[in-house]
Amino acid sequence: MYPSVRLLVNEHNLGFGKANNIGLSLAIDEHYEYVFLINQDAWVSRVSIGNMIKAAESEQMKAVISPVHLNGAGEQLDHGFATYINKTSIWEVYEQRDTIQVDFINAAFWFIPIDIVKRVGGFSPLFYHYGEDKDYANRLKFHHYAFGYTSSATGYHDRAYRISSFIDIERAEYVYFLSEYANINYTLGKAFLKSIIASTFKGLKCLFKADWQMALAYYKMAFKLLCNTAAVRRIRKQTKKEGRSFI
Image 1 (tube, rainbow, N blue to C red):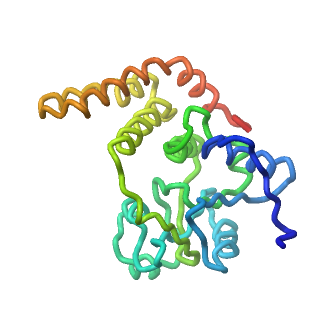
Image 2 (cartoon, rainbow, N blue to C red):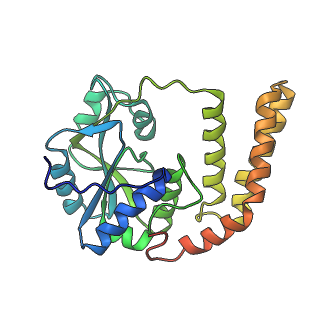
Image 3 (cartoon, rainbow, N blue to C red):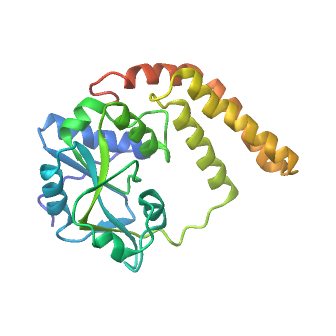
C-alpha cells in the first residue's frame, strides 16, 4: 500500500533511544541527507517536511530544526513546547518568519541534518524512555550545534490526555538528574553536584516537609545514580569525541 515506506520490526521494545538509533544508523549507511524523528502520537502538516528542509538549508547555523508544536486539536501551543520557547500565543509564534534559535525542544519532532548525527552520534544507552532528548541536547551544545524552530512548519502532539502519576513524576526527576550527571558541558565534579548532591538535598527538603514518600524516592535516585557512576563516566568520555557513538 505504501511502497516508499520501509518498516523495521524489532522483536522487543528497545526503548526510544535504541529504536531511533537503528534508523539513524541506516540513514548514515544509505547516504541520506536528513533524518526526521516523530513520536507515535504526533503528526505534521503536508508542507512541514519540505519547509523544514528549506529552513535547514537556508540557515547559517547548523541546527536541529523543529516545527511549531501544537496540541492534538491544533487550538493552542503544546504545553512543553510553549515552556521551551517561552511563549504562550499561537499568533505570536506564527508572526515570526525566521528560524528561531532556542536552547532546547523536546524530541516529538526533530529534523536533523545527517552531518550532525555523524559527529554527535546516536542516543545514549543510559536512557531507556525519557531524558534521551535532553541528554542529546547537552551533547549538541558541547559540539557547537543548536536548536531552532520554524513557523513555516506545524506539528500536532496529541498528549493532553496524559495524567501524571507518582511513578511518572519520580521517573521524570530521575532522568533529569541522570542527564545532569551525564552532561559533558560540566566537569565531572560539577555534574556530581548537580545530580547526586542535588537529589540528596531535595530529599532532605522533603523530609522537612514530612513528605516521606518523595524523600525516599530522592534518596533512592541518589543511590541509583551513584551505582551508575562507572557507566556515566565511560559514556561521558565517549560522547566528548566526535563520531558515530552508539550507532
